[in-house]
Length: 196
Image 1: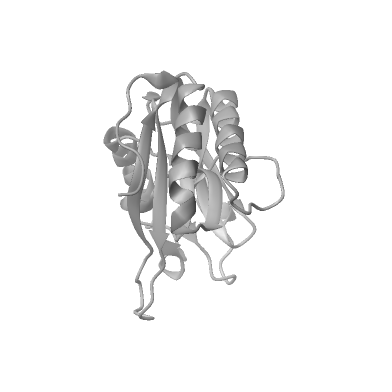
Image 2 (image 1 turned 90 degrees about the vertical axis):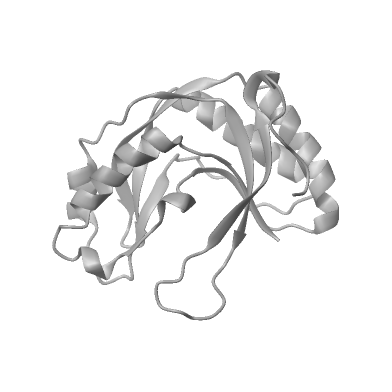
């Protein structure tokens, strides 16, 4: 199964970003982008690609440990940018160093559980808003998003998410996401964990 560890924005923060995204969709060329749905908005900490079902219990224990070792921290959706002509994203503000540390711990947890991970790269926190098809310059959208400053919230949970890719070739079909486990940061009580 395709899994990733993430921090999810709360509904109020997602609503603020949705209003900003709606304004972006009015810009010329916006209809040429594939916009992500709110249900898929997240800050990926560690992308694990394919994980065997048998690995899930050990991975869950290790992610719970990583969450327990990381105190809650302040986070906000801020500004934006793009990766070439492939992806438009919203950035992070607040205690970004704590988010990076949690990403390192989630990556280490996956590796120790035996999950094959990509080579280490500098972690750049971002939430993907839209994907390009290589035909549309994303600069105007990133520039318009540059002044966006969402309200801060307390990130207090590490979430393990399963991604189910579209299969039918239906235009506009998006990946589906389901929560596999959740762990409170700082050991403030386990929300739920393990396979689910």
